[in-house]
Image (cartoon, rainbow, N blue to C red):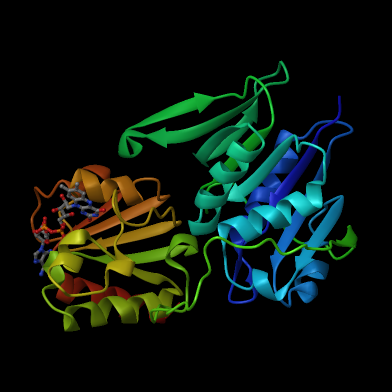
Length: 323
Ligand code: FAD
């Protein structure tokens, strides 16, 4: 029987996040002949984004546009998905493993009495029609392979792991505007106070320059910020640096911080505690700069530089500026 798969779009600052096109790719990999893959866009004033989403080789793009959907509210967003799906039960819904997806996927799974596989980094067809989902466990020390015994499926995908699908101007999915009957919300968001953050989203950055306690002060992050600027990357941190007050906790990477999987991760003055590795060991290339040659970070690093970060980082910046 053919399946109806959906991908819930992740939006930030009025734009589609890259994890959305990665989730579309995953849903398309999970689909077979005769299956449909459609997107669900939820927000306020988002009709302009629908035409962008329509270029990803989808069957349909459903748009649920309502002032009440401006900010994420679980009950409202679930209602929006229900407005798209109607009385039927979806076969599968894919989400980004983001703040919204991590909250909404289990909520939807509970509502439709389905199974959830979260934080997926890869998926493959095992040849007998089963889709096998891979997710890291034990802070990235092992990987678990899971299949759904029965539907409906609810899946969240860790950003930066599944290749993003490229927009193709020749493709045009059918756009469907969906009526939204605002429920009476039990919880109302009165205000969202945003912290100042870097230009590039840490969890989706291709290059991350992270500082640890070795950075020694707030000012010690400046050379890292300058290198990030040259490389078009984002700045992250260890908990050691956050606890010491050198930077905001929003930058923390690790078991109790953000998980990042950039193409290049540069750890500066970070010892490489297991809790830190949990957040970055999936990076494609890891470069460690540490003045202690015995620092555990060198065990996971592809390239190690034993030296003072205050000498090495400016040199890297100088060299990369020439490219
Ligand atoms: P340190 O371990 O103090 O290392 C500093 C490093 O800088 C040293 O290796 C030193 O040689 C080097 N250095 C010093 N000066 C220089 C210099 N000038 N140039 C080059 N190198 C220099 N940690 C996280 O990062 N993320 C988490 O999410 C996290 N969650 C945790 C959860 C729990 C439950 C617990 C118990 C701990 C958690 N931690 C986490 C903390 C973790 O165990 C470590 O304490 C922390 O990662 C250490 O941070 P650090 O590497 O910056 O500091």
